[in-house]
Amino acid sequence: MSHPIPSTVRADDLLRHLQDLRSGTYEGAMSRGAKEGVYRQGITLLRSVAVEILEEANTLFLNGTGKVQMIGPEEDGSGGLVTRFELSWPEQRAARVMRGPNGPLQPVRLVVNYSQGFHHPHLSGSTAGLWPFQVTSAADAERQKSVLAAIVELELHQRIFETDWRILPVSRQ
Image 1 (cartoon, rainbow, N blue to C red):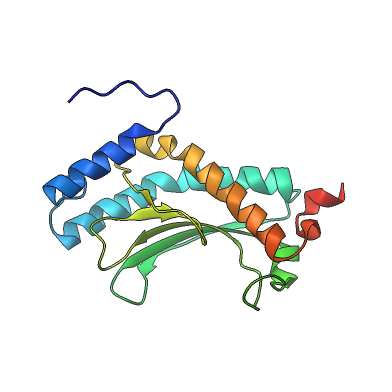
Image 2 (image 1 turned 60 degrees about the vertical axis):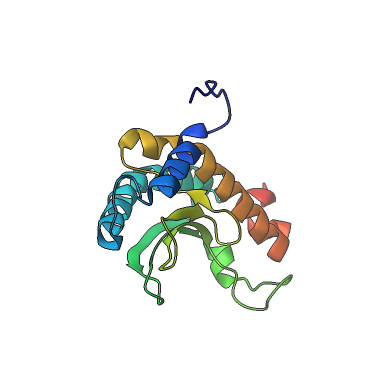
């Protein structure tokens, strides 16, 4: 099958995802244990890229007041795995949601979730997304930058919506 060379559409991940669905594998791995190994390798490869994107957002929007942390990979409580890359900052940690379910304002999150019932892992934010997580090389991880940046922008806007535009330190400049 011949495909046009994409200029802006990220075709590689979705085409690999479709191949995995056809073959019943995840990047060639067949068993759940082997697929979890591919997931963990992908997380290791993605880590520096995810941290770089969150640190850039910290500099641009939080005046460097934020803290980036990686949580996981860990059990998700229902037999799956989850990894979260989070960006928190003082104003966010002190805030409560004003629009939506009442509770503390959550950090900006990049999430890689491999739920028990899923064929393979997905990349998302805390409120949106389900991109195929097809990361087996440094080049694959680097290719995720545009998706990660879009998720971070969405997450920051969501925090503004949930509270107030002044939640971002840059808004006071």
